[in-house]
Length: 418
Image (cartoon, rainbow, N blue to C red):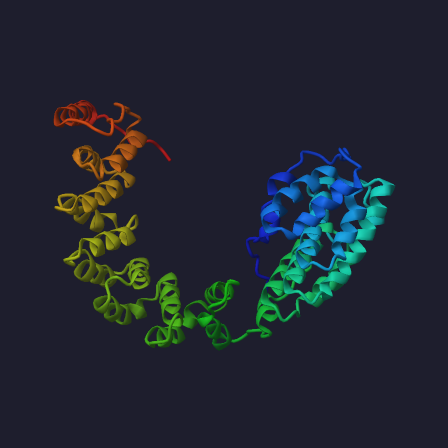
């Protein structure tokens, strides 16, 4: 099985510094101070949650000559100081690195973009970082797992591989991502669950996963890719059960597979609960005559306007001929919010019928703001917004400007291209 290509989720500590890493080219950093006391003060502030971010920013500006002090920070008894020292070393290194340099194939002695002095300084810090993978504090191991791979040194691989077996899931997850950046690929299921699924039943087991690591999403993808229509029968059994979230996820897959066999089961689900958007979208995706009739009968014809709207949304754009007439009817609803949403959907679908609906809503003090924003965005017209306090005559004059414009231009008006 191909390794899951996750959208890289950088740990929070790295996200904070993304703007600082986007250098157009590597440069030797200027040292603005050699004041040891000032540097130690900044590092000591790493343990203060309120000051840590600003102190990291100042440390980053000092460049590579601050590394000897950061090495001591890596060994500090305070876990917050150790953790932020890891981040600081990583950020300084990345600012010295050329964009796109290959990770995990060389070691520091081969990094031509570093001076000899810088190599020695980073080498000393890196050796300490390698030992920190055994830290008793889980937040330290998570930070090591997140940042170690960014140094590109091949010596990080064996340490990160060890972290793949850490008892903490976030440590394993960060180590998996870091190794991926170094072109080392591992089975994501095996890393995160200790299991290597092969049969359909193995993948179905993961539909009930409730962790934050995308395991069930990968399982869904593999079920569709590896088994396709062969999975329908087993998915129907799960969709007919009361087990959540497995049931909802099985229904979603049945829709994705356009499983016509699922329509009777989905009918019963939607009939009982027309607010069930998973079933709603599955029926719309299957799109057979029977499936659409179910959505019309139990969704578009439902007495609840919100259910009608959600059903119409699910039918668009593939079944617009079914949905649009109901939206035009909803635009006459007594509730201004329903009229607004219906009108906005019509405009989004490039239906001219939505324009006069939004124009009329300019009289509604609650809905006028959203109506005006959409009208101005689509028509590129601007009759200036009304002040907070207005008379009825001012509102009438404003609305009439829009009405007159529309009357003059409705026949030739064209919606802007996306």
